[in-house]
Image (cartoon, rainbow over all chains, first blue to last red; front, side, top):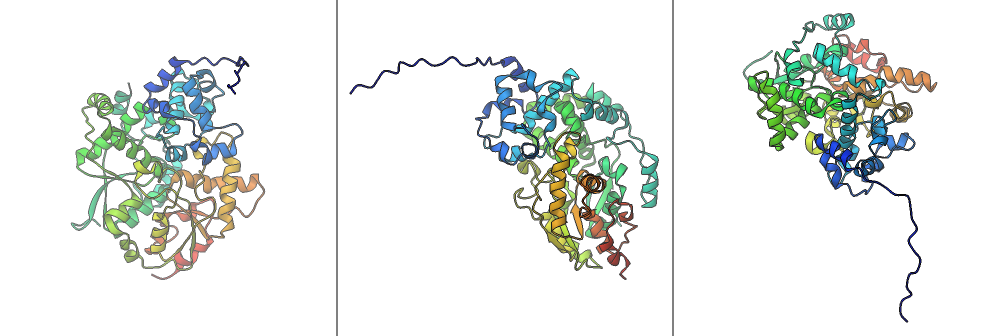
Length: 168
Length: 299
C-alpha cells in the first residue's frame, strides 16, 4: 500500500524573530562567542543553586535567549542575570565549554554599559570604591583598632593613579 | 623569621581580609614562617579586583587590573600566594586567559603600557592551601604542631571559587575535594563532611531571592553533623556563616544554627601554640567554646 499523503498542513505557530545584533554585542565581551556552542542539553541546570531556590531561574533558558537575541528580557531592570550565585557549577558541568556563568556575566557587562543594573547589585558603588581607594572595602576606625590588637601594621592608603589610567 | 632555607612568595592580601577580618591575616603571618614560607610584602598591589561585582561591570577592565597586579609580582621576580578564594579566582583566571589568548594579552598590555607596565605571564598564583600541599609539603603542618587539636570535630565548607572552574583553579577534584580535610587532619583534628558541602554561600547574590532558604539548608546540614567548628578558607563564606548565621538563626527562629565558623589558619595557629586572642577568635560573632581548652592548654 502506498503511504498516505500527509494532507495536514503545519499549523502556524508564533513567529520567533532572531536578533543577531544582540548576540553580536554579547560576542564582543570576553568569552561571549562561546554561547554559540550551546546545544541546549541542560547540564547547566541540574547543579544550579539558583535553579533550585529561585522559581523560574534556568541557565539553559538564558543561553537560549542570548542565542535568539531576546535582549530586552535579559538586559533590563527585571533581568534574571542577578539571580546567578556565581558558583561556577554550570561552567564545570557544560560538555560544550560554553561557560554559561561567563555568558551571564557578559549580559551583566551589557547592562553596566547602559547603566541599568539594579542599585542593590552594588556594581557601580563597588567599582567607584576600588577606583578611589584601591580596595573593595574602605578602611575604617574598626579596621585600625582590630589590626593594632592583633599586632598588624596599619593599612596604608593605596595610590590609585595607575588604576585610573588603565581604566580610562 | 626569614632565613635562607625559607621559600619566598609574594603575599597578595586582597581587601576583605586585611580590612574586615584582619584576624585571618594575623593567623597567616604568624603560622606560615613555621612552615618554611617567607611571606614577602610588595608595594603596589590593589584590589584583585573582585570576581563578582567588578567583573560584572567590565570583564576587560577586570582583567587589566588583575594583570597589573601580576605585573607587580613579575617585576619582583616572585610567584604569588593568595589567602582569599576570590583573589585566587581573579588572578588564576587572568593568568589562564592571558597566557592562552595572545590577542587579549596584547589588548591588556596596551592598557598597562600607559603606566609603564607589562604583563608577561611568568608569575604563578597559588592559594595558600595548595602552596602548603605542593610547594612546602603537607607534612610540614604536623611537624609545626605543638598542641594537637585532638577530639576537635571540624565540618568543612570548601566554598565555590577555591575549586571551580577546576581546570583554571587546579586545586582539587571539585566533586570530591580532599585538600582541606587533609590539612585539618594534620592538626590532629577530625574533618567531617556535611550533606550540603557543595552548596554556595550566596554572598555574590545576597540581595536576591536565593540566599535565605539556601543558607538555611546549608547551615542546617552543618548543624546536623554536630561539629565543634565550621572550617573555611574564604572570607565571603565566613561573613555568611558568622554574622550571617546569627541573622539567619533569628529569622528562622532556629537556635541549632550556632556552629562557629573559623578560618583554617586560626586553627593552625592554635595548634602551633597561639592563643584565641592572638588569632582573633574572640572577635567572632559566633563564639567557639570548644576551642578554649586548646588555647588554655600548656604548650
